[in-house]
Length: 485
Image (cartoon, rainbow, N blue to C red; front, side, top):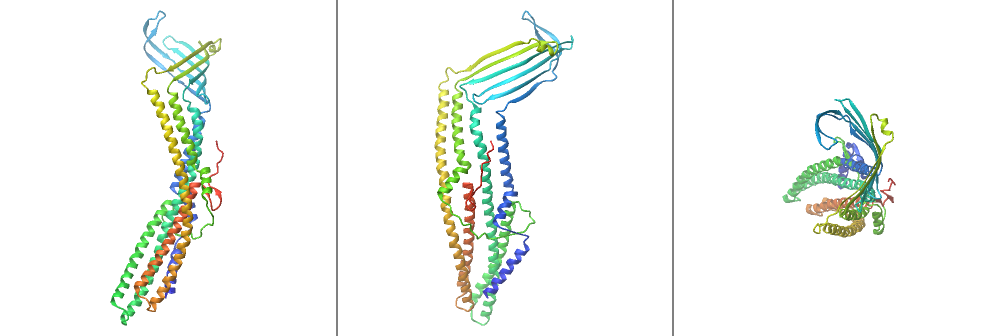
């Protein structure tokens, strides 16, 4: 009788598989999640944003050619005009006064200064008198250099490349997190898929038992109490089948939404019961985590940012800037006259801003920066410990999960065999329906425990990949530096 029930369940399962358009393995679900899920597109966009931010940072150290001016500038108003004796005369002025400037600027990353070469032209046309004149700077070279100040160019050059390298590693970590999430959704569907198969099998089984118990009741070999118990179990089985179908569709909808599968695509999942044979040691996992993880190089970046804030606090104590420029300028009725014996233009100045009495403000600012740096150093050291402890815990759990799979798989086989024996003994009247139901529940619970062990193993496997950026099954790095600078 048990063989007939098993064959009936197998036929239902095969019919379900035939109806499904797609049969997916766990690797195919992960691949789809990485390729077409909205989360993978978000990770890709964030990586692209980080790339262009880095490119923008790199351009800060390149020379900038700029063009500026006012073309045209027209004015018709009464304005004050300075006279040779220093007095002012208000006259109506109707004039055009456009100007244009071209400059080449280059920051000096080593010192934090800026050097530029500029040229500019101004044209004046008094429309009332039809008088015209050109004036301009043929060439002007300027240097601006802060003294004892904060140099953002130097610190950005040390910090920004690390930030960019972090972003590339974070992208791979996000990809592995997508894999882990896809595994979780995969097993949610698979558990409900198996629950539906169990419920369908139990319904067919309880229907057969009901007929047997009804026959026994008719000939007086069983009591009405046992018959009612069987009928109640049959009703529960029908309810469980309906609930299992609803739960399966809900789990499928979540998986379909996560991996970007169209609503009309039906699918079935294959149990990933083949565990890849590989060993993981704590030392090996820590080695790859330190070599590959974004968090680990982030410790250095955070340390440099703290030092940068201290340097910035120091630079704000005394604000001194040296500026110097040398150029040639001239004036004439035509543009060509500007290049005929131009006069020298020399400017030099030293600007400073030093507080005499600030009531301890500078000292407080410096001490705050030092205290913040000290606090960050402590936090970084604690984060390093947490970083390593997370790896150690995951590796230890991973080895326990492998053992748990072996135990639950054996328990599943034993529970199935026990149920077969109990069913045969029930059919010949050696045990009652209560003991048969106990064996049935143990069989179903053992199957679900095995699935849960598989889910925990595969989820931990992809979590371990994310924490180390290393594929232990294939012995390959998940992140390889591309050398892009």
